[in-house]
Length: 241
Length: 241
Ligand SMILES: Nc1ncnc2c1ncn2[C@@H]1O[C@H](COP(=O)(O)OP(=O)(O)O)[C@@H](O)[C@H]1O
Ligand SMILES: Nc1ncnc2c1ncn2[C@@H]1O[C@H](COP(=O)(O)OP(=O)(O)O)[C@@H](O)[C@H]1O
Ligand SMILES: [Mg+2]
Ligand SMILES: [Mg+2]
Image 1: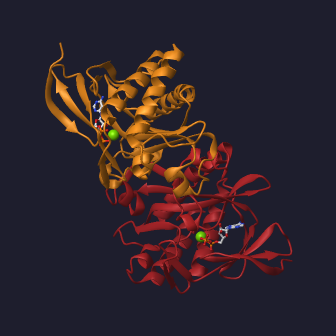
Image 2 (image 1 turned 180 degrees about the vertical axis):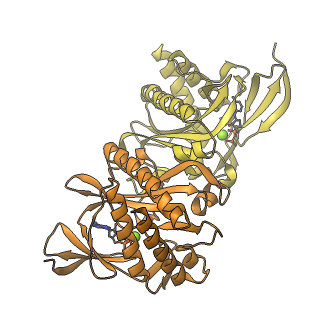
């Protein structure tokens, strides 16, 4: 059986613990919320459990469709067992609708449905503010190989294709989301989390924001939004089966 | 013969005049210098003539090697005749050595020779500060097609391969440079200028900066640097023939 050992690292949203098996980590999802690169801090009650269950549910859905993920199994609420990976320091953002930094930086009309998904790579480095990079930056500065980037690009687009219909069944538009990938036995697999912290989700009928933007923009009903998304997704993924 | 007509537009470094032939523009290079997206302003005496002659000399060199450029012919000092193109709103930066925004944004060590050139695309938009973009941004937001980007990428890398040895013959390291491309009869051709305003050039022996960074960073001997680069390049391109 799995035994929890010392903490490997504590991030902004999760604590990663070593276990008796060095190839397995225990993830404890936190209720802590941060935004604007750590400038805004707060708590979203129940977030840890929601994000953990939602991530698990979506990782299982993706695995079933052929995407390798780090999920081994769910444990007690708010905790999961995952494969220990070496995280590639490249955050992958997939955008279906223009909003946020895309609109601010490039003047793209807020809410505009993009003619094709936009993939963005950011260098995962809090001190530098996770700057946007391109493939040349990544390979020249040694953060991933060309081959790994090709795998990541294909997987990220496939994840988008797989998540969009599930979200729609839950009455949610998948506006954009962030993924992290890691190396496990030399292979690229999907890691980290998929949650309202890392996705923008808009109610398909009303356009209401049901994600971390409620916290970022002080829109209220933050906890309720997280719970709502999870409730709907439990149903949607059940129907899917 | 060519007659100068009204001004089409005045940029920060050049004035573009219509001529009696709508497919030809007369470019008047200015001594005006700007930096930091127009925040710093000044004059570099003789710059217009240097940049015009250097651009002409390098465009001719590139044409001879198969790169289509907008240059038709040199006129009086500081003026040239070019093909009227529709400028693609994508600035192309080619980097051989890490410095400037690459080092600041991504923490790459100043002066580090990159293992391969880094190409960057920026959306040519002064109001937005020429933000870095990737291929997906460009195609999704309609600034260039996938096919045009492929041509631009190939041409930019070939320009780099062609300019590096000429610069080295002139005792200059080609650190990085910016190109602009335009459409002429539906074809992508190289436009704008190639000058110490748009290239970073370091003396190969001493590392001395011989480009607009002398103006940006108030290093003095700005005019002398521009003249020196031109003098050396005249020689280098002669030897080349
Ligand atoms: N399977 C995994 N193996 C190792 N590290 C992981 C795994 N999944 C996620 N991580 C990393 O765990 C850390 C903690 O997560 P989180 O609290 O979200 O961090 P952050 O503050 O960087 O957002 C992050 O650096 C994340 O990349
Ligand atoms: N062959 C060409 N046809 C049309 N426009 C051109 C051509 N070459 C350059 N331009 C454009 O001329 C304008 C003036 O140049 P410049 O003074 O360098 O402008 P900027 O202030 O944008 O740097 C720029 O918008 C540039 O893109
Ligand atoms: Mg995180
Ligand atoms: Mg210019």
